[in-house]
Length: 230
Length: 113
View 1 (cartoon, chains in turn blue, cyan):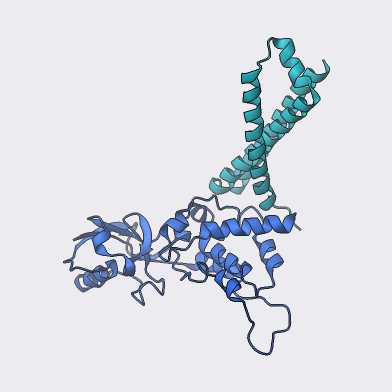
View 2 (view 1 turned 90 degrees about the vertical axis):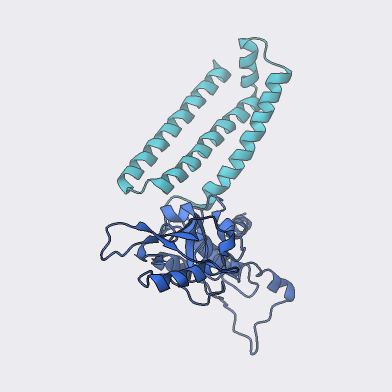
């Protein structure tokens, strides 16, 4: 099977270029397995991966034009030649490895942790099963960055727009019955950029390898803002 | 201090104005279709009626605010040079305010002259 992989070493290359590789494919192989085979031919290729089963979110990349995780993308589903680029819109460190700093900055900015003002109970902070169900489809995010780096609004304003991944987490804590910082969280999302650069393009939900729906979460945040404003 | 362009209010207004404009345009087309004004005088009297006059005024104000929010979004997305962005935003604002004044001049002419 033929692969065209974007290479770029900022120390020696002026601009990125595509390099061709040929890999013998066996049934059941994932794209990550192909990378491992390629690294045996050419160990200079830089790819980031860790768990190899879609849990850690390290190996997000642009595969034949769509963002995804190489470790859970079966080669059988891909059209030849398989063209792989780093996720778009981020500074390239080397080959397929990008600098995710702005992504993490936006994630930190939404305060992705429970804020509880009342004195903490002696034992656990309890939650009814119904309230817990509201977090399904939100807590599963692995922060791979496929969604935010597929979002045109995030490409244009990565320093100001929170991006789908961070906004999904913003909603994850707004929706949590144990969180007591709703007004603060909503206040911090006000303004023309942080939340409202989202134009419901829906690339985020199309590419999410965990089938989560940031667009829907953003809609929920807007509805909650409406409820709090009238 | 909050001096920046808003987020929530423009977004909400974009939705409300869209619904209003859709309703007004449907009503307007239905009215034109079912009982078209026979001559210029009838047309003027129709617009001079207080309800129609007010509905039309609200329509144009909604339209220009809707245009403001929409084009403002495009400018915020694509124009990253701050001085250029400021000039374009101000020109857009002045154009839309001028258009609003022009519409109101026309509407006052219909109602009072």
